Length: 394
Length: 164
Image 1 (cartoon, each protein chain N blue to C red):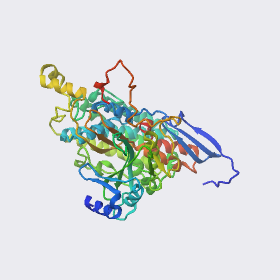
Image 2: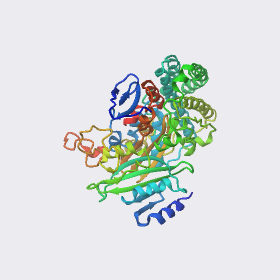
Image 3: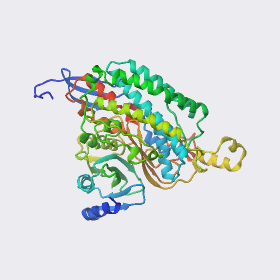
Image 4: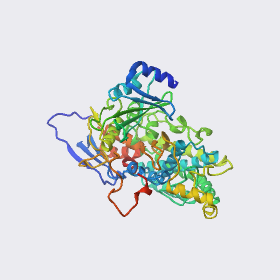
């Protein structure tokens, strides 16, 4: 750290709000001594859309599209996390088939999230090629989403109580093709960066944080695991039958940019394994639960059966009795523990809904992580922390 | 560690400050008085046998019909034994002051700023208590229930069918 004497003058540098290297809209006002960063002051909230307030006026099923727009690099995890929160409040038990289908989709989302983060870390260190390689694969994942739910980026995937339709044969075919192709691409991507001398010099011992500080700062996800703490919601508080599967939780040692990169990379391999296992062992059965009061009936029945029409009307108008209570449910999102704190007073909309957004919690450690470093390292640190503006500002 | 062990320890230590205990919710939920909240969080974090060393979440809730209408909800996690706990405290909107926990958890810094931003809860001793997501010149606390999401004076829309 540079010595701070009283008569010393520092340069103020605005990094953001719109800066090509920040991948989102957030501002950092840096005090610089030459190229050394002395301090940073963060401003966030540029794309705050008041989701928590909007959610207080919307029936439960209409909140799913809001969750899409939190971490938009892995929207399906947010959607399914929200469905599971409501199911927890309502006391709905999902079948194994639904659980496994959810795991497949959530792990696909995790793969895209990690691929974006890692390839962009590469881009910010000057290696554009790897980014192009893996973005092609992200596109394939979006094609799979498209087969399953019709949407690509903001997916609104699934329903409370299952899915709106089963995986069709095209989706399964695309999924299998993806599983065959990704390992090759991933190996190629790793060859470009993992042992690349320039990349290693740029990332090792850059933007590090100790495990103790990371826990104090509420870090979760790959950023926490890079410091050596093996906390993963998927195995600490298993949801959606994750406990049926065998997977490794990779951890780092230094908590620096390189460790974060490696942890994410290994998690992609683990996710691939999980998807393969889930797909091979996909149980037979229905893709939705038998809960007519919460799960929309098939459209043809709505037009031909009185009972289905009544349920349809009641669900759409939000006239279903919801139990009073409060639940906290969390899932392992792309960048950490994504929690939903839901308070219901029995009304048609939540009384209070709070999103525990992982990057809102850990991004506040950013000044501490870049202090004493140089600007170019600060850029890399930010991209490897995977701060997503939509999730940060909610 | 079982719930009753935690409850016994906290009862012995805090007595009447512990206002309510709810074991029927998804997590063990404690309600404590506003005076004791900082001590209780500190005790939960630092006591050798409790070790709730991770602050998962901190947020506010507004119950307009209660006298102490503003709630602060803390979710804590013991990462070693994997136990979660929820702690609540309620304050009056006339004097919504709660002691900060930023001295215990750095994570609380922005969480408390967010809670202040939306509910106006004043965290005493917070190093930088100012708005975080909303603009600085905003002069009300938007998540409080007295601010409806849509304009209540509109006449072209029958709001009865659209929730609160």
